[in-house]
Length: 358
Image (tube, rainbow, N blue to C red; front, top):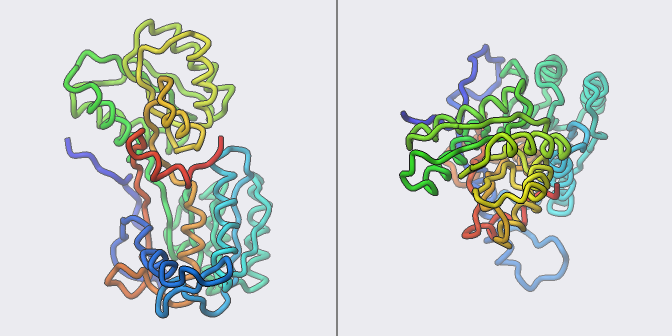
């Protein structure tokens, strides 16, 4: 079976002025490829914000006012989304960020976007609490000539955003499954368990489907599965149940490192250490445990908490009429899907600085 890396999407109509062409799927690091070069050129200069090389995307330009709205920071990953956005103000003197208070109230988030429209911001970056519910107001912004960058949770009309930045939930499952296959090394009798997030959510379904498809490639399947609620308490509760039901496990994939705090507590309480655990999302807590190499957690799969910051950087490029420097294209792509790499003791140093605290 050939594994896909992106979930399928429904086609839709296009508004005049939207960029034509297929969606681009690429690593976002391409848009900042010149940043390090610029910093190196300015090494030794005074000030905390070195000037970028002439012509680089990081070179200061006209001031860009961007409105940003996201759900409430009731989860480590979500808190990091807004923290990473705020950090950009220190990096770009030409960035005028208007960050709305995080909310899980759809009506309030709609009013935040309407305020951005009335204030005449240059662009809006929106991680919706509910993508479908936020679609009409996003369309309203687009029709007012304000480009919208949709982050993580998709609108139900592609015309509601000029750019969409997505993680890869299916790809997370594929990466976790491929890691299990590598570690199983041909043992088709290995016992595999899974602790998912909220089962009713499409993101959970995509993660589980990717995991199942990848395992099938090496003759494995999921022998035991429980669904939690992306919380520490629910992770501990369902992990306790799973461990009681399964006396011997070889591999356990937990979808989310925040709920993983509870999963690890249940494992410690049960005194179990015969299996390899893989996490999900990429928290700093998980990465420190991987570095220590003293427990069952040996790897985690990234779901970037930098997506909001990626959206703001793309909005800045759009308004300043710049492109992504390492691409031939003269416009910012319509869609960017981020990769879901596996972090292990061998490469954790590359990722831990961008990890979030659970």
